[in-house]
Amino acid sequence: MLGAITTKHEIMKWKRSWAKMKTGIMLMSDRGPDGAPMDWKEHLRKCKERGLETVDLFASVLEAIGETVGSAKNVLQEIGLEPSLYCVATDLVSPEPSIRRQSLDSVRRGIDDGHELGLTHLFSYGGQHANEGEPALRRYVDGLRQAADLCAEDGMTLSIENAGKMCHTDVELERCINLVDRPNMKVTFDGGNFILAGCDSHNAAELLADKVVHVHVKSFAPDPKRQSRPFRYVPIGEGLVDYRRIRDTLVSAGFDGILSFEPEGGHNSKWYDSVATVAEIVQEAREAQGVR
Image (cartoon, rainbow, N blue to C red):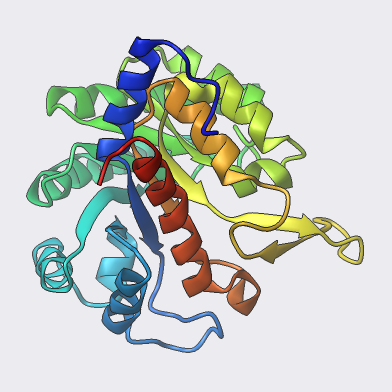
C-alpha cells in the first residue's frame, strides 16, 4: 500500500508525480568510496546500470575535474543520463557585503549555466554551514530573497537544504523559507542531515512537504561509540530513514522531483547498492500506478 490515497484527485496527482519522478545521484567529486581518484564517467555508467537516470551537477566539481557545463552535458548524453539540477556555492550569510555580492554573481552564473543544461532549478549551498544566530539568519534571508528574485526573472526555482549550523532542523528551515517569502524559494530535503540535527526525518517530511522540490538521499544508524555525532552511514533501505515513507508523504503533497543519492560514507553506504535501492523506490511506485 503506497500511502493513504483514496480520492480520484489524489490518485491522479500521485500518477502525475510518478510520471515525472526520477532517480538521481550527486556528482560531488571524482573520488570513490575508498577516497582514491576514480573514473567518474565509468562511475556514472555503473550507476546507470543500477537504475540511475539523472545527475546533480556542482559548479565547483566541474571546475575541479576540468569540465565545462557543455562538455558535462555531452558526457551525460553519451551515457544516457540527464542533468537534474545545478549546484552553486554561495555565502549569502557573510557580514562582508563584497562576499554577498560575489555570491549573487555566482547565482547569476549558475542561472546561465542552468539554462545551458536545460534546467529550471538552482541549488545554493554554503554560508549557512558555518554561521548561526539571529543576525546571521536575517542576512541570509535578505540574500536568499535577492537570489530568488534573480532566479524568478529567468523562470528558475531556487532551493537550499537543511545543513550546518543554520536551518539544520525542520522548524528552522521552515522559518527561513517563510521569512524569504518568495514563491520560487524551495527546499532540497536531506533525510540524513535531519538525523544529525536531532530531528525525525519523517516528521520533517510532513512539516515541509509542500515546500520540497528535491531530495538528497542518505541514511544513518545509531553508533554510540561516536562522540559528537553518534551515527554511522548505512546503505539506503537500512537505518533510521525510511525513504519509502518519506516518498509517500512528499508525493501526497504534489512532489514530482528527484530522489538523489548522496555518495558519502565510503564503503559503509554501499554506493551502487544504494543507487539500485533508490531506483526501486521510484520504480515500485510507478508500477503500482501503472506508470512505466
